[in-house]
Length: 86
Image (cartoon, rainbow, N blue to C red; front, side, top):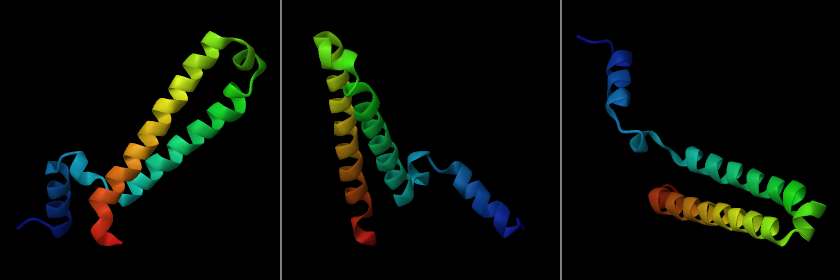
């Protein structure tokens, strides 16, 4: 008979990567996205080159927009997956 720890480890290893994600993983992702967006705003968007060069500014704003969308999507997924735990 297998040790209980080994059985749990085997069950964990047989799960898909998505099944291993818990609510904290989604919270952590939201935090990381917020850090990136804040850094982008503080150090790139506020930089004089970005303010004066339209092409650069447009590209950076598009990147920020995509990060914002990822933030929103992550929050919605988290709410959907874990609403029963609230």
